[in-house]
Length: 155
Image 1 (cartoon, one colour):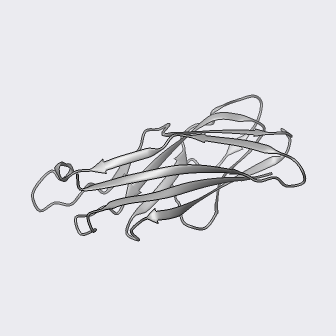
Image 2 (cartoon, one colour):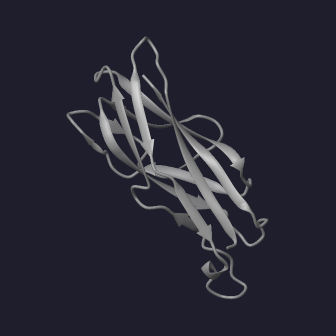
């Protein structure tokens, strides 16, 4: 085993104006990078590794289905290297009633600063998320790298 990439998920519900939002995030991604991932001597690792389309499932349930909800994303590095670039995208709308969801359909880099990910109104069940990691190289120190992704909802 060359490196182990472990990504954990944390959901934070933010209450503004006394209106509750419940958020549930399930799933994690562990990627073991092996020397056998290099196809030929003298080559480096692949440019990027991508998770399953539904690696994480997010459910958002607000008290008020008519208010706009902003979903933010950030990461808190546990053991990380600055050359590693972690991205996330939403791959579908999830299951929901007559509500709207927009944004988040292209990979965006996750940083240590909260950034807008997508917006929605109403309840959305099992919104699938996918991850991509790049920057893995034979020149990085051999160790386990990990980070925690935080999703924050603002109503």
